[in-house]
Amino acid sequence: MTERKVEEAKADRDVTREELAETLDALGHKLDVRTRAADKVDDTIDRATSQVEKTVSAPAAEKFRSGAEAVRNNPLPLFAAVLGGVLAIRLLARRRKQGGAC
Figure 1 (cartoon, rainbow, N blue to C red):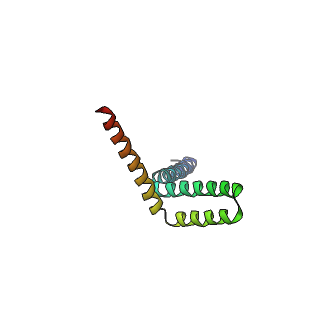
Figure 2: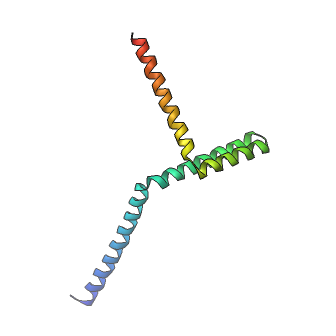
Figure 3: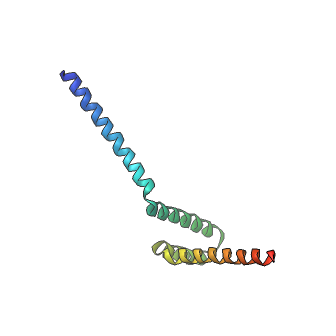
């Protein structure tokens, strides 16, 4: 192999490694559901807080902001409440459907 071909092969290898690293980083980000969910929660809380600050008084906005921070720091109770609400709605809908079929 000539010196030039060796250099071209090394350059090609380096480009391939760089592309592979970028692809793996992108896959890792896509597969990191927990971080993506936390980012989504943060974005939603930020938008809601911004909207509340535009529509209510400063003290009420401050209370909402502190509540939003509590949710951001510990989202499990909110998640459990939402899940419970969804399950209750499904149960009520199922009972209503069964009651109407009789």
